[in-house]
Each structure stands twice: as structure tokens, then as C-alpha cells.
Length: 514
Image (cartoon, rainbow, N blue to C red; front, side, top):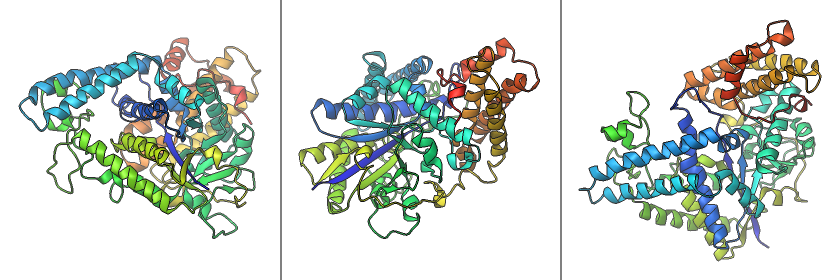
């Protein structure tokens, strides 16, 4: 009997849309992820499907990411981003024509970006391609809370948890045409009682960290298995040993010396007009044109050669398959990762994944690729109560609740209580009150994004994260004013806000409440 192997990719970005500027640095988070992760992964899956390779893989596609994939304005800006790189590569081809080692890599990048440009200009959209992969049975898609809200902290208010889950499911129904069976809880963060909200929308399983299950009560000393909570939710833990082989830059495959070096970028190496044209302001910035491989723990980096790197990725795929076979006696093997590991952080990741699934099918291994739904209803799943937990530091909430970001939550708790009261006090469908409430819920949901608290903790783009939180909260206050005895929002201001924070056009305020 074959051992089920479940591989889950969590595809998420915070909603970043800035029509107020022609180019916006933070929007490049999306452009980088689209060109380095999502399009390459879709290509890998379509290659497998075209060649008749039987495979199954699971992805969680978060509502903010789905909304950006569906956004016409961001689609055009994605094309512009690729066009800028193609223009720069013409200069790079001239610059490197006398370098027989580097020049082929530059030519490879031109071919690569030309392919990406065609994919965004011809044929189906990325969203349509994902829908087709789901319809063919190859891809199972999990939902996620609406804006990746960290539910264990939001749980003080039922309305906050309900809105995150209900709007998440509504977005999947609208953009993908599916009723999701499973969910990736934001940051794999579980709390007792979340089952009530998930049961209400038909979700019966969720991805969690291994410690969520290993610390559940009563103690259980058997193999790592999907576990059923007393509330009826199956929580599926990832295998830490197998997962580390794939995500660890030190002891795992991404650290191979032949693989592309993430931090070495032409934006910092080449000071020429065609490169500077991609910078944001006077300071150098990443361009996505990375010509060097990891090489080793040395400042000297050799040139990256895509062909060699792809061959090495296939070798690592064979090694990983053997590791799976070594564990073939286990009841189930589950690994899960941030999708951006594949392509963005580890450029060769999509090649590795395609090679793994091809090899697994070709050799008819005693390990078989499955979806999460295939292992969510096992009769041997123990019934145990997990604690509050996440896949963050120490398995706790500390990354999202600490002195760097704890100021957020009093505003979020107060905001959802005020907004819930206003929604309940307003007749469903009333206008213009319904318009104000819809935008107010958008602002609250955007402010609840776990990304902002995470960024404040990691001390990266802190100013941007703080500003996004404060702007959303200020807009929420202004939208709630007419429900609390104040003046209604100005039409010009409201239209501008609706154009910027235009996520969830189908949002129904009254449907979000428990």
C-alpha cells in the first residue's frame, strides 16, 4: 500500500495597490512574486499536465493574492515591470558581449522575461490557468482568512474571526468558483473555538505546524498524523525533518553552491543608466537580474548557469524522493511551505518540484502524491485538543504580539465592535449607509492583516507597515462617523478611497457577522 505524500504551498501577499503613483516600491513585492514564483509554478504544473504526468498538489491562495491576480491595473503594471527588465537587458547584452562566461546568462534572462511577457499578453490569465488546474483535479486550492488576519489575537471578538473567514470563502467562490473544503489558517495559527466559524462555511480541515499536534492533549506518542479536534476540525501537521530539507538555506537544498544567489543583484553591481532606470529614487534596488550563484561562504561569487542549476535541482529531487521512500512506512508524509520559497527565495524551486513529481510518477513509487482532502478523513486520526499555536517563533503568538506592534490591537478590537454595532443597526441594503459600511469593513480587514505586525517585528519596511495600519484605521474612523452622530464622508474622498482600497468588490457587510 502506498504512503500518501502531501505537499502544500501557501501563496500569500498583503494587498498592495497604489494607483496614486506611477511606480510604487511595495507593489514590486507582487511583481517579483508573480514573475519569480507564481508564473513559474503554473508553468511547472501545466508542463506536467500536458505530458500526462499524474500528480496532485495543494495550494492555499489567499484572498489578497487572488484579488491582485484579478486586478486589471496590477496586470498592466506587471507587464510594465517585465518591460522595464527587457529594456534593461538590451543594455546588459551589449555590456556583456565580450564576457563569454556571463553573456549566456544574460541572454537566458532575456528569453525568460520574453516568455513571461507573452504569458501576460497572450492566452488565459494566471487566475484562469489556476482555475483550469483545479478543474483538472491536479490542484486542490485551500482558502485563507480574508486578509491573513492572525485569528488567535482577533478571537476576542467573534465578529472579527467571522468576517475574516466568511469573506475569505466568499472571495474564493467569486474568483475561483469553488467552495473550499480546507483552509490555511494565517501563520498556521490555531486557537480552540475556531471550529465553530469554520464549520459554518463548510471547512473541515486546516494546515498547522507540527508542534500544534505534538503539544495537543491528551498526550499521544504515535506517528505524526492528522488529528481531529473535539470541535470536529482535522488539523494536518507538517513533517519538520522533511520540510527542513526543502526550506533550509543551510542544511537544505536551497543552499547548493550552484543555485542562484538571492542577494547578489545587478541593481547593486552595475552602475549604468539602463540599470538605474529600474531604481526607486537615488538608492540602488533589486532588479531581479541576478547573475551569480551561491558558490560558498565567500564574497567571491561565480557566474550562475541556469542549465547546471536545473540539472542539480533534478538531482536534489531524486534525493528527496529517496528520503520519502525511506519513510514509506509512515501513515502519511506532509510538507508545507510559503510558496515564495519556490522561485523567489530559491529560484530553482519550481524546477525541483517539477522534477520531483515527474520522478515520483515515472517510477511508480511506494509514495504517492495526494491532496489534503485525501488525508483529512482518516479513521486512525486521534481526537485531541491542540493549544493556541502558530508556526512562528517558539510556536506561539509572540511574533505578532510584542512591544513593537501591540499598539495595533486596541484599535482593531474597538474598531470591529463599533463597526459590528453600526452594521447591526442598519437595515440591510440601505444606501448610502451600505456603501459606507462596505468600505469600512474593507478598511478594518486591511488593518487586521498579520503582515503589518510581522513587518514591525522583523524591522524591515516598518514605516510602510505602520502607515498602512494607521491609514486604514483613520479611514475606518471617518467612515463610521455618520453612524455615531458625525458627518458623512465627502463624496470625493470616498471615491478616492474606494479606488485605492478596492479589495473585495462583492463585500456584503451583513453577511460577515456570525
